[in-house]
Picture 1 (tube, helix red, strand yellow):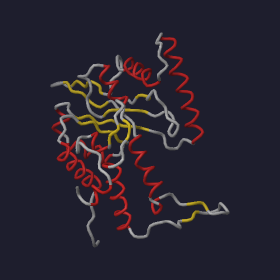
Picture 2: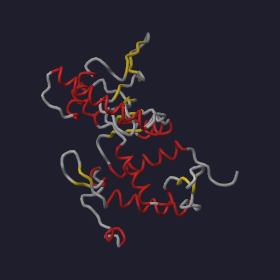
Picture 3: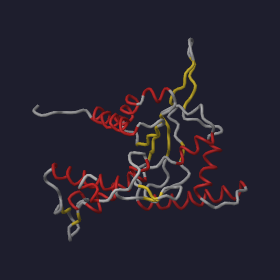
Length: 257
């Protein structure tokens, strides 16, 4: 066939390699769904860091077949169960984030993501594929699970709990919402007035222009728009990962300042 055909794993590897070269971090934490291309690419690009336990990959596993009502009910139920658990254990706080951390800390006293495998010649750790329920359910996906494909057995339960608390796809969802709200050509199709079909009135028919507007939005999102971090500071995504130490405005981007 005419044209260039690229395997998605190779494309993902190229992205990871570029990010690795740009950021130059000492430690890496990767969160994704259970897509094989992402997992394979991460293990290839960060193989050295994984062996040294400087890179870890977490899975955020959600059941996308749930209805919105199911997710809402699971969210309310999980919130009640978490508060009830904290009350019976004797914690005075009703902060859901803190209670979720205490739950995870207790879970990791007995449960691990990897199992020990013994052979006639040696012993090694193997991924157990034993996900846990994330104690903080969300309204949009209800109760979801977390797993880790890299070995965390050298860490203390409190340290694993801290890491797992950050396993969420909120930042990805936030960016997708920005696309839907700001780029009409990429928003979901509209229902027709009669309700018996979909209208693609704003649909984009030229992928080149879709790429242009996505590049503009991505640059603005990462370098110009700031968000409140857990420690109370307002930083852009680029500032949070150390690519830059300042918040840019559109004039800076346009005139390369």
